[in-house]
Each structure stands twice: as structure tokens, then as C-alpha cells.
Length: 231
Image (cartoon, rainbow, N blue to C red; front, side, top):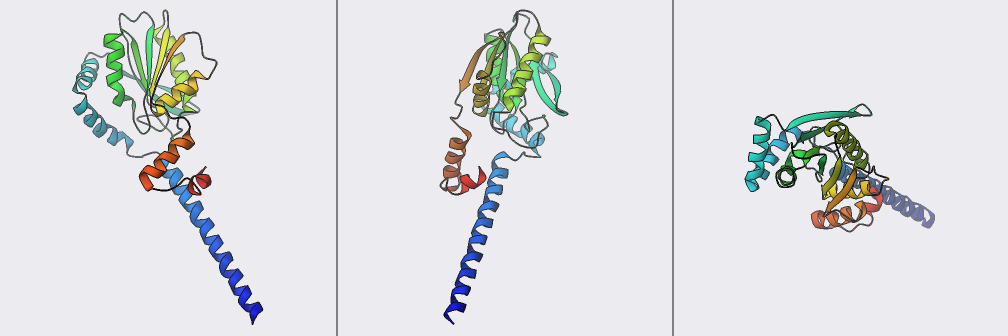
């Protein structure tokens, strides 16, 4: 009888362990998708988000509309590994090669940073280019990449800028939040001489630290074991 009871206990424990492991794996997959999944409605949402942003920064809306009506603000794309990367750009007649590559943040898009484009073009006399990162805005992509792989796209856009704007090319890369992390990753590369300056605005120390903070703020949960499973 005791042997049968022990067997039942071990079977019960084993079943509970399997259930717990399966639940943790399920939560891990959910968290990965929640954090890095691409919003399929991002094209429609970007319009609403830009309208909201423009309410806070009406001068950037006037700037964007003015450039578009004058035919100065334009769209361009490049293809990387068969996938489209999109960007907006606006040349300046007084730039003489000065160019700002402006990198947006997590779940943002290029147009949300027209307020920075306005500063660089109107106050500093720069050409501006605003890429949509992988899986954001009008760029293809099936997951948010948090900056590391995005650095390669930014370098591609820098090369595109040099070839397109020509002249005495001098580039500043200005990134905010995830864009700032992307900028830091670019800064760690052996960059071309024409990239002169990096502006890192409120980037995170690591993806782990960022997710740990969000896990606590959004869900009130510790990193262990969820982040360990997700990672």
C-alpha cells in the first residue's frame, strides 16, 4: 500500500512539474511576442499616432505638410535580404553635405520624429533622413530587433545618404530610446570617416535591463523565472 501511495505521489509531483514547465514556456513565448511582435495594423496606427504627436508639436505638422506640398519631403526604399526598408528624406540647399540620420524609438515610426528633423533642417541647415526601422512604419519585418541588427540598416542608410546627397558628406546619427540604443550599436562599429557624430538620447543599458524594468512596471513580476525562460 505504501509503495502504491509513493508512486501516486511521484506521478502527481511529476505531472505538476510538467505543468509548471509548460506554463513557464507558454508565458515565455507570450512575453516574447508581447515585447517583440510586430503590430500588423501599424500602418493605420501610425496615422493616428502622428495626429496625436502633431497635437503636441503642431509646428512639426506644419513643417511636414509644408515640405510634402513643396515636393521636398519624399519617400525612398532600399531592399535588404529581399525585404523593404523605408525612409523619408528632405534635402537642404544650404547643407553642403551636412546630413542628419534620425532614428526613432520602440514601436514608433519615422514621422513621429519630424520635430527633430525640423531642428536639424531649419536651425542647423542639414539634409535629413528618417528611416523606418525593421518591422516599424512602412518597413517590412516580422519582429522588433531592439537595435543590434538595426545598426546594419542605419549604416546602409548612411551609405545611401552619402551617395544620394553627395558633396562633402558629414553625417550625424541621432537616436532616441531604442533608436539611441541602435545609435550606440552603430558607434561600436568601424564606421566610415563621413560619420562624424552620434547623439544618444535616453537609450537603455541592455535589452535585459529594459525588459526587467517593463516586466515589473507593466505586470508587477520579477525577472525570475519568466525573463530567464524568455531569454
